[in-house]
Image 1 (spheres, rainbow, N blue to C red):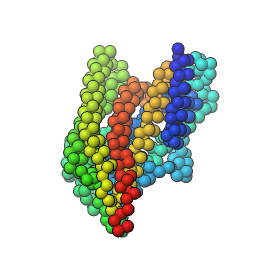
Image 2: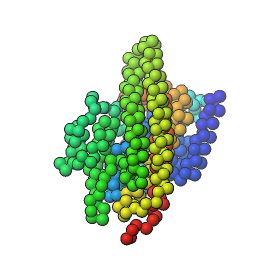
Image 3: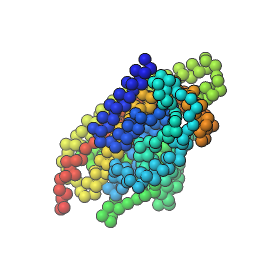
Image 4: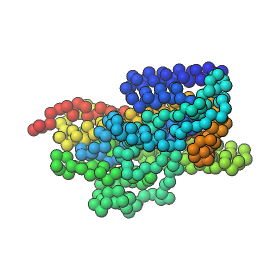
Length: 422
């Protein structure tokens, strides 16, 4: 039965390769092929789940928090291929991580005994290759942020709702003394939900044809600025954002509960206490599902209003066309990150059951590896929540992937219309 499971898993990975080739997603193709031939490792499963979480976080930041204008350069940068020189530099940096170090062979893995081959860990002198999608995520982070946390950080939140003074102080640390309140909405999002991410100052500055331009706090606000039905769009967006904030608050509760469950495992708490926390988690996830359904209902109204934008024919000025093109670049980038994250999650969930079976052997291997103590501690602590985290990430990817789809190709026809006087 286990051998059949493994063979089916490989077949599913190869099917994902075929899909990725169809989508021409280079990082996805490389990642899937690599996953099909690499040895089994729960540490790699954890790394892929955390990388997918970061890809989702970047997708949300691009949709909800990054300022955008006709002068913005970041939308085209994140939607373009990684320059080969930059890819090489990042690959070299990733290779320095202990995860990719050589590990000594100690004994044949559980899966190796089942399949007749040695496959667990980095056995027989095998060294894991850097994840192509991880490199892409790191590249995007480097483009957008001056500072950002590592993939294993525990998010910290403010203990109060950010006020204007909090937002202004945070913004001035990024931009300087010439901070403008026009960016309050962007920095509110960063400060409340992603305070460890410090965007680069350059993304809040710029000119178009030598003139100052209007910045919008995020891509949805930019869409509204180019639409002939801004009032209807505004009402639909405001309704969505109320539920979005409710969802983020619930995710915060879930993150805190997961940390409590991990602490209980480390403290070897009794079964009754563990079951109580697990039941509390079930309640929180049910509430998250309800909020997600509510968000989708609100998104249906937004989708109808946005669909009308695609049919509008009002001519765009040169600056508006540049903004429209940047909107599309942003959507292309977020959809690409979404595909990458789905690939990582699919691979991780396929490999998770057998990787858990092989954990005793992997821990023995890790004992002879660089940074053994912290890696073993991290792996054991996080193994309890891998399935929960993957499920939550998957739901978020579906939700924001659908939201990005609503804005895909909105201004294609209008961008092609000749600008008056042009």
